[in-house]
Length: 248
Image (cartoon, rainbow, N blue to C red; front, side, top):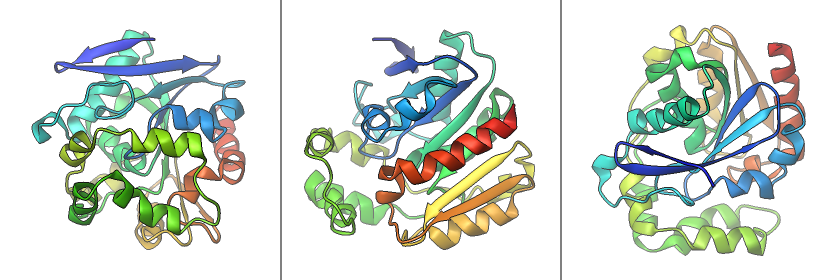
């Protein structure tokens, strides 16, 4: 069960498969286990060395309650510390939701460490996260309720139990307002794949960002909201695998 220590916080990660390295970064309230639960690991490990990261505040990583322990620069430095621990000079990156937004931090703080970026349901524009913080203050069930109510099927009990076990104070501390990183878009010359569900409230911003990328590709997921855009890996993986295959 490997860890790295970065900036005084222990960061947990897993490695699966063989091939070109691919970092997988989950969304808020999730953990690296969700990549297994929703079929991404099974679908990708035959062709790639997957580096799955428990973002600080999640899973088996350290969970500071001080908001100063969180930020784009710290999140990116956690990933770089893991790549250094594995002696990986460059990798591909795949993130969803919070992990998708983190891709723009990667482009700002560590552009030389990544061959390509896959950005699910994330954009670089300024965004207040106060509504999410308020739901978290009411409890993790309140935070999850809007996502689950929008889904055609309930969250699998094992996955939901893991979500409900989150350290809420850590999630509140890390759920900061998102800065405006739009100026990065013209500089992101590595191949980028962006996608989002058509019923996701982030749809228009994700689509707009994809149009501003010099080397960007975009696809949408008809009829799907935010959580389903991650859960329905059978719709996402074919596009992701095609994109990554073109990189080689």
